Amino acid sequence: MYYTRSSSTRSARICVTLSALVMGALACSDTPAAEAPSADEARFAAEARSAVRAGSADEPWFGVMLPPGFEPHALHVISNRPAAPAVVPQGESQYRHLAGAAIQADLEAIVGFSRESEETHEVGEGQIWGRITGFPSGAKTIQWAVSEFRAAGISNVELQPFEQNEGASIWLPLSWEVRLLGDPAFGAGSADVVLESAMPLSAGDLSGGSLTAPLVYVGTATSAELANIDVRGKVAVQKAIPQGHTVFVRSPVGPRSQDLLDRGAVAVLTIIDLPGNMRARDIGCGGGTCFNIGGQDGRFLESVMDAAAVSGTTADIRVEMRLESERFSGLSAANGVAIIPGTSRSDEYVVLNAHADAWFDGAGDNGDGLAVLVALARHFATPGMQQERSIVFVASAGHHSSGLSGPGNFVAMNPEIAEGAVLVVNLEHTAQRHITPARSLHEDGYREWTMDSHEAPIVAGITNLAPFLEGLVERGIQRYGTNFVSGPNTMASGEGGTYRRLGVPVFTTMQGPPMYHTTGEVLEMVSTPGLERMARFMAFFVEEVSGAPVARLDPR
Picture 1 (cartoon, rainbow, N blue to C red):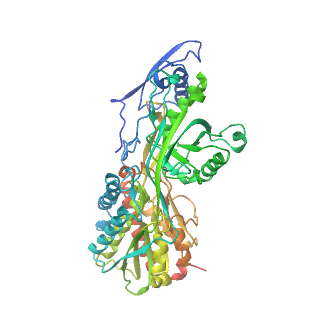
Picture 2: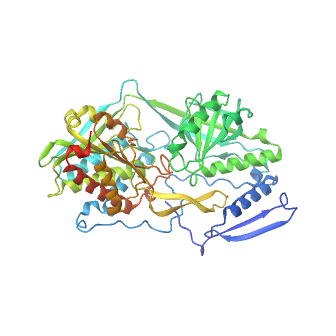
Picture 3: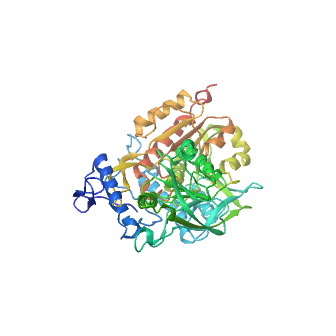
């Protein structure tokens, strides 16, 4: 689900009392919401709104607008314009399996397994869902991929089961709530507010119980600043402002969470400054009690704490948390493996990998990569498309569940392929739309986000930086318009890292968009033309490497 904006159908009225700022003068303005205010105007309006609400003792919660709640499959991003169409070079129009609409249909089927996970409450009360390795949702996704490989006419297809490593387990929250407790001190009628976007990252001492404690705001405080903030016995509220990929804030935010716990905080709430009011399962915080909070819940919390500071009621701001969780061990999973034999070098293998597991809907991590993998299997299984080298398609069980490594078990269970592999391609996060903060604001003052007409930047990591392989990436940009970032690099994140042990080049395509591991990673986040762009580029890439001498793939 997403929404569009139109200046003819929607306007935002900003009317704020400025007595605290401009000697009691009153200023109101009508501004069409689709007409973007300047940064100064937006900041001025937000500051003025906070000023008046801080003095609204006769309204609930100081007059601060309540957060919008949580929608499980929603993407609140402005999207009036479609993605740029895919470029189909001359002579490729007959490759129907690489068409965006066909791949999109597969993506919908893949996301359907996640939706079923939520609908059936596969985990606890259904507040977390996905295609989870070791659970039915993960198994059904792999079985679907195997069925599609067979339906494509590939004869050598296997479901390769394996067990969770001894001593390994996966921690999952089953049921939880984060409740901001109301108090007449915040204005008449200030009832409790449940922060519905809350997402537990670790239980600490909370599992199976509840915790009530006052809040203290630390924002993005450094160690020097924290030396002047007393967090003992309190729930610390910090803020993460991702610059693109949520992974980029893991290193500052995770250690800061642990530092806050070490300083005596009883729990940590991390506000994730991303679109709308999503749940985000990322970052982590060591062994304590930690929750992520969505952007609009976070804005409400910050605004209330600001108003409480003005009114002198900060000590009255309290939160109640409850959490039930469980560790799962003794699980099993499987990879789906298909092989199309080569015409002249069948003992040499090009391995194509895409992981099937995901948190939440997982349309972009990694539904798009898996859908492209299946499209490529159909393409190369078409009569006349067989290549010189054998092509191996791995629908990997994934890497989100501890002790159930899809690529690790594939390598261990297929020694002949591991020995004969000349190149590995890892398809991971390949076609999500590019989104950025908009110039406009939600009604509550929170920044809106907007899509542009292309995909998010794609890192093309080649572990050995082989000139021939780098040249194919350059040609792909010109031929198909794939949005690869500028500049070579050796990145092999995600599943690519495990394949390094084979000692052959690993080519990883990976986006780092903001929706990573969030409930906003829905179907509308993925570009249908982008799926086609990546599929056509990959088909071209595989054809080129299949006939190239090993010395060009790996010049040592």
